[in-house]
Length: 196
Image 1 (cartoon, rainbow, N blue to C red):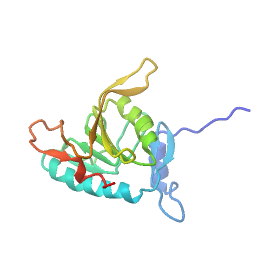
Image 2: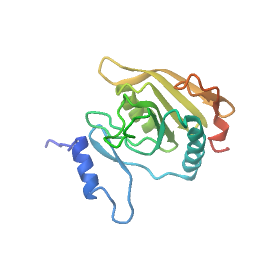
Image 3: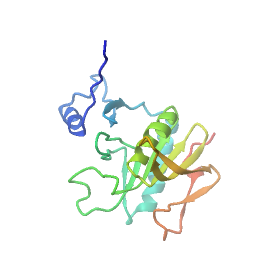
Image 4: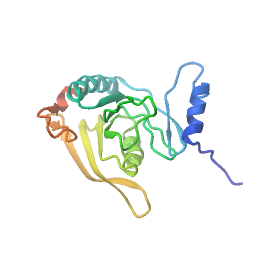
């Protein structure tokens, strides 16, 4: 017997969302479309929420007047993915994205925060971002207590995406936002990661 899986287009997924089909009756679960498959996102734990809250505060100060910061909102990765990263820094656009979600051309930096979803965020979503040509991907790794910085996206001979450069920024270090070379301020990792 042949087993077939239904893959959804972005338009179909958005229609299901608009109709309320993807809502659990007991609580609203967050979903995202990854390579045509509807994926339910794991609930955020306390450490994830702590990191998210601190990062929101720090990034808001750094990007103000330079770009837009969105938190857990969709980005459009054609043809069949509509992920909702924890944070995305996007170019300022006159319409403020009223006419559509940001696309890879709009995206300066994608950020995920991961503990139980670490392998998924690193291998599946990281590959997806690289395939889309997103130049900068940060992964706040709560398991190993560090920031993983990915750059130089490429596709291998089979078309699978990856990043040529990866470096670790430890909790006692700081990192500059390379997307703003004129910015003379760094993000201190200890202000973002929960203490261990």
